[in-house]
Length: 241
Image 1 (cartoon, rainbow, N blue to C red):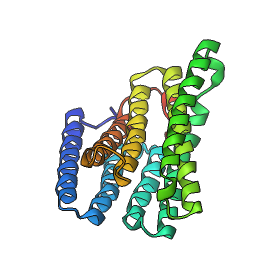
Image 2: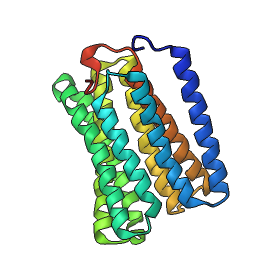
Image 3: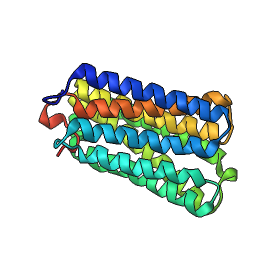
Image 4: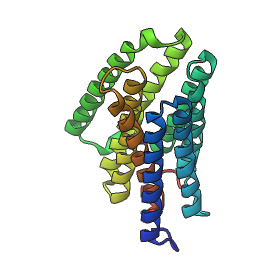
Protein backbone atom coordinates (compact mmCIF):
# COMPACT_ATOMS: atom_id res chain seq x y z
CA UNK A 1 0.00 0.00 0.00
CA UNK A 2 1.02 3.61 -0.24
CA UNK A 3 3.03 4.79 2.70
CA UNK A 4 0.91 5.82 5.67
CA UNK A 5 -2.22 3.96 4.60
CA UNK A 6 -3.60 1.25 6.86
CA UNK A 7 -4.71 -1.72 4.77
CA UNK A 8 -7.44 -2.83 7.20
CA UNK A 9 -8.79 0.72 7.46
CA UNK A 10 -9.07 1.04 3.68
CA UNK A 11 -10.81 -2.33 3.36
CA UNK A 12 -13.25 -1.49 6.14
CA UNK A 13 -14.14 1.91 4.68
CA UNK A 14 -14.60 0.53 1.15
CA UNK A 15 -16.77 -2.38 2.37
CA UNK A 16 -18.99 -0.10 4.43
CA UNK A 17 -19.38 2.31 1.52
CA UNK A 18 -20.10 -0.50 -0.94
CA UNK A 19 -22.76 -2.04 1.32
CA UNK A 20 -24.45 1.30 1.98
CA UNK A 21 -24.52 2.19 -1.72
CA UNK A 22 -25.87 -1.22 -2.70
CA UNK A 23 -28.61 -1.29 -0.04
CA UNK A 24 -29.60 2.29 -0.85
CA UNK A 25 -29.82 1.42 -4.53
CA UNK A 26 -32.07 -1.59 -3.89
CA UNK A 27 -34.40 0.39 -1.60
CA UNK A 28 -34.70 3.26 -4.07
CA UNK A 29 -35.25 0.94 -7.04
CA UNK A 30 -37.88 -1.06 -5.15
CA UNK A 31 -39.73 2.21 -4.62
CA UNK A 32 -39.52 2.75 -8.39
CA UNK A 33 -37.84 6.12 -7.95
CA UNK A 34 -35.77 5.77 -11.12
CA UNK A 35 -34.57 9.38 -11.11
CA UNK A 36 -32.98 8.97 -7.69
CA UNK A 37 -31.71 5.51 -8.65
CA UNK A 38 -29.83 6.98 -11.61
CA UNK A 39 -28.60 9.79 -9.40
CA UNK A 40 -27.22 7.21 -6.95
CA UNK A 41 -25.07 5.86 -9.78
CA UNK A 42 -23.42 9.27 -10.08
CA UNK A 43 -23.08 9.49 -6.29
CA UNK A 44 -21.44 6.04 -6.32
CA UNK A 45 -18.83 7.20 -8.83
CA UNK A 46 -18.17 10.41 -6.92
CA UNK A 47 -17.86 8.50 -3.63
CA UNK A 48 -15.10 6.27 -4.98
CA UNK A 49 -13.45 9.28 -6.59
CA UNK A 50 -13.41 10.96 -3.19
CA UNK A 51 -11.83 7.90 -1.57
CA UNK A 52 -9.28 7.75 -4.38
CA UNK A 53 -8.21 11.33 -3.74
CA UNK A 54 -8.30 10.82 0.04
CA UNK A 55 -6.21 7.65 0.14
CA UNK A 56 -3.68 8.49 -2.58
CA UNK A 57 -2.94 12.04 -1.44
CA UNK A 58 -0.28 13.67 -3.59
CA UNK A 59 0.34 10.42 -5.47
CA UNK A 60 -2.60 10.96 -7.83
CA UNK A 61 -3.25 8.62 -10.74
CA UNK A 62 -4.47 11.15 -13.32
CA UNK A 63 -5.92 8.47 -15.60
CA UNK A 64 -8.20 7.04 -12.90
CA UNK A 65 -9.22 10.49 -11.67
CA UNK A 66 -10.05 11.59 -15.21
CA UNK A 67 -12.06 8.43 -15.82
CA UNK A 68 -14.04 8.70 -12.59
CA UNK A 69 -14.82 12.40 -13.13
CA UNK A 70 -16.14 11.80 -16.65
CA UNK A 71 -17.96 8.63 -15.59
CA UNK A 72 -19.64 10.55 -12.77
CA UNK A 73 -20.79 13.28 -15.16
CA UNK A 74 -22.11 10.68 -17.61
CA UNK A 75 -23.98 8.92 -14.80
CA UNK A 76 -25.68 12.12 -13.64
CA UNK A 77 -26.65 13.02 -17.21
CA UNK A 78 -28.54 9.72 -17.52
CA UNK A 79 -31.05 11.07 -15.00
CA UNK A 80 -32.59 12.78 -18.04
CA UNK A 81 -31.82 9.93 -20.44
CA UNK A 82 -35.25 10.21 -22.12
CA UNK A 83 -34.20 13.64 -23.42
CA UNK A 84 -32.37 13.20 -26.74
CA UNK A 85 -29.83 15.98 -26.20
CA UNK A 86 -28.90 14.92 -22.68
CA UNK A 87 -28.84 11.24 -23.69
CA UNK A 88 -26.33 12.10 -26.43
CA UNK A 89 -24.29 14.16 -23.94
CA UNK A 90 -24.28 11.19 -21.55
CA UNK A 91 -23.02 8.85 -24.29
CA UNK A 92 -20.34 11.32 -25.39
CA UNK A 93 -19.09 11.74 -21.83
CA UNK A 94 -19.18 7.97 -21.34
CA UNK A 95 -17.08 7.51 -24.47
CA UNK A 96 -14.59 10.15 -23.28
CA UNK A 97 -14.26 8.32 -19.96
CA UNK A 98 -13.21 5.13 -21.75
CA UNK A 99 -10.98 7.13 -24.08
CA UNK A 100 -9.05 8.32 -21.01
CA UNK A 101 -8.41 4.67 -20.12
CA UNK A 102 -7.31 3.88 -23.67
CA UNK A 103 -4.85 6.80 -23.66
CA UNK A 104 -3.47 5.68 -20.29
CA UNK A 105 -3.07 2.04 -21.36
CA UNK A 106 -1.54 2.42 -24.82
CA UNK A 107 1.96 3.48 -23.60
CA UNK A 108 2.04 0.44 -21.28
CA UNK A 109 1.31 -2.28 -23.84
CA UNK A 110 3.09 -3.61 -26.90
CA UNK A 111 2.10 -6.33 -29.37
CA UNK A 112 5.80 -7.03 -29.92
CA UNK A 113 5.94 -8.76 -26.54
CA UNK A 114 3.37 -11.37 -27.63
CA UNK A 115 4.09 -14.49 -29.66
CA UNK A 116 2.02 -15.30 -32.75
CA UNK A 117 -0.20 -17.92 -31.08
CA UNK A 118 -1.16 -15.67 -28.19
CA UNK A 119 -1.71 -12.76 -30.55
CA UNK A 120 -4.13 -14.87 -32.63
CA UNK A 121 -5.96 -16.00 -29.49
CA UNK A 122 -6.25 -12.44 -28.25
CA UNK A 123 -7.49 -11.25 -31.65
CA UNK A 124 -10.03 -14.10 -31.78
CA UNK A 125 -11.26 -13.35 -28.26
CA UNK A 126 -11.64 -9.65 -28.98
CA UNK A 127 -13.28 -10.37 -32.35
CA UNK A 128 -15.90 -12.70 -30.86
CA UNK A 129 -16.69 -10.36 -27.98
CA UNK A 130 -16.75 -7.39 -30.32
CA UNK A 131 -19.21 -9.17 -32.62
CA UNK A 132 -21.48 -10.18 -29.74
CA UNK A 133 -21.44 -6.63 -28.40
CA UNK A 134 -22.20 -5.31 -31.89
CA UNK A 135 -25.17 -7.69 -32.20
CA UNK A 136 -26.40 -6.50 -28.83
CA UNK A 137 -26.14 -2.88 -29.92
CA UNK A 138 -28.16 -3.73 -33.04
CA UNK A 139 -30.90 -5.04 -30.75
CA UNK A 140 -31.35 -1.62 -29.15
CA UNK A 141 -31.33 0.34 -32.41
CA UNK A 142 -35.13 0.66 -32.46
CA UNK A 143 -35.13 1.89 -28.86
CA UNK A 144 -32.74 4.80 -29.39
CA UNK A 145 -33.90 8.41 -29.47
CA UNK A 146 -32.16 9.46 -32.69
CA UNK A 147 -29.54 8.39 -35.22
CA UNK A 148 -26.92 10.50 -33.42
CA UNK A 149 -27.81 8.89 -30.10
CA UNK A 150 -27.45 5.44 -31.65
CA UNK A 151 -24.11 6.41 -33.25
CA UNK A 152 -22.61 7.33 -29.90
CA UNK A 153 -23.97 4.14 -28.31
CA UNK A 154 -22.18 2.21 -31.07
CA UNK A 155 -19.02 4.25 -30.53
CA UNK A 156 -19.21 3.55 -26.81
CA UNK A 157 -19.56 -0.18 -27.45
CA UNK A 158 -16.45 -0.10 -29.64
CA UNK A 159 -14.54 1.70 -26.89
CA UNK A 160 -15.50 -1.05 -24.44
CA UNK A 161 -13.97 -3.67 -26.74
CA UNK A 162 -10.75 -1.65 -27.10
CA UNK A 163 -10.42 -1.03 -23.35
CA UNK A 164 -11.08 -4.72 -22.64
CA UNK A 165 -8.41 -5.79 -25.12
CA UNK A 166 -5.82 -3.32 -23.82
CA UNK A 167 -6.44 -4.32 -20.20
CA UNK A 168 -5.96 -8.01 -21.05
CA UNK A 169 -2.77 -7.16 -22.91
CA UNK A 170 -1.61 -4.99 -20.02
CA UNK A 171 -2.12 -7.83 -17.55
CA UNK A 172 -0.36 -10.33 -19.84
CA UNK A 173 2.70 -8.10 -20.26
CA UNK A 174 3.11 -7.07 -16.61
CA UNK A 175 1.55 -10.14 -14.97
CA UNK A 176 1.39 -8.74 -11.44
CA UNK A 177 -1.14 -8.39 -8.64
CA UNK A 178 -1.69 -4.74 -9.60
CA UNK A 179 -2.28 -5.48 -13.29
CA UNK A 180 -4.71 -8.30 -12.43
CA UNK A 181 -6.69 -6.04 -10.08
CA UNK A 182 -6.86 -3.38 -12.78
CA UNK A 183 -8.02 -5.85 -15.43
CA UNK A 184 -10.70 -7.26 -13.13
CA UNK A 185 -11.91 -3.74 -12.41
CA UNK A 186 -12.22 -2.98 -16.13
CA UNK A 187 -14.18 -6.14 -16.90
CA UNK A 188 -16.45 -5.62 -13.89
CA UNK A 189 -17.33 -2.18 -15.24
CA UNK A 190 -17.74 -3.51 -18.82
CA UNK A 191 -20.13 -6.27 -17.77
CA UNK A 192 -21.86 -3.74 -15.53
CA UNK A 193 -22.52 -1.62 -18.63
CA UNK A 194 -23.93 -4.63 -20.45
CA UNK A 195 -26.31 -5.53 -17.61
CA UNK A 196 -27.21 -1.87 -17.31
CA UNK A 197 -28.39 -1.83 -20.93
CA UNK A 198 -30.22 -5.15 -20.50
CA UNK A 199 -31.99 -3.77 -17.44
CA UNK A 200 -32.84 -0.38 -18.96
CA UNK A 201 -34.34 -1.84 -22.15
CA UNK A 202 -35.86 -4.74 -20.16
CA UNK A 203 -34.48 -7.45 -22.46
CA UNK A 204 -34.13 -10.16 -19.83
CA UNK A 205 -33.82 -11.09 -16.13
CA UNK A 206 -36.03 -8.24 -14.89
CA UNK A 207 -34.72 -6.44 -11.80
CA UNK A 208 -31.87 -8.93 -11.46
CA UNK A 209 -30.06 -7.35 -14.40
CA UNK A 210 -30.48 -3.92 -12.81
CA UNK A 211 -29.01 -5.08 -9.50
CA UNK A 212 -26.21 -6.95 -11.28
CA UNK A 213 -25.30 -3.75 -13.11
CA UNK A 214 -25.10 -1.76 -9.88
CA UNK A 215 -23.20 -4.56 -8.09
CA UNK A 216 -20.62 -4.82 -10.87
CA UNK A 217 -20.22 -1.04 -10.95
CA UNK A 218 -19.49 -0.94 -7.21
CA UNK A 219 -17.08 -3.90 -7.46
CA UNK A 220 -15.34 -2.39 -10.48
CA UNK A 221 -14.82 1.00 -8.84
CA UNK A 222 -13.73 -0.68 -5.61
CA UNK A 223 -11.12 -2.70 -7.47
CA UNK A 224 -10.00 0.41 -9.32
CA UNK A 225 -9.52 2.16 -6.00
CA UNK A 226 -7.59 -0.84 -4.72
CA UNK A 227 -5.37 -0.72 -7.80
CA UNK A 228 -4.62 2.96 -7.20
CA UNK A 229 -3.35 2.39 -3.68
CA UNK A 230 -1.81 -1.05 -3.90
CA UNK A 231 1.98 -1.23 -3.86
CA UNK A 232 3.29 -1.63 -7.42
CA UNK A 233 6.54 -1.15 -9.28
CA UNK A 234 6.82 2.07 -11.28
CA UNK A 235 6.87 0.41 -14.76
CA UNK A 236 3.63 -1.38 -13.87
CA UNK A 237 1.68 1.78 -13.06
CA UNK A 238 -0.81 3.11 -15.57
CA UNK A 239 -0.40 6.86 -15.86
CA UNK A 240 0.67 7.55 -12.28
CA UNK A 241 1.61 11.07 -11.34
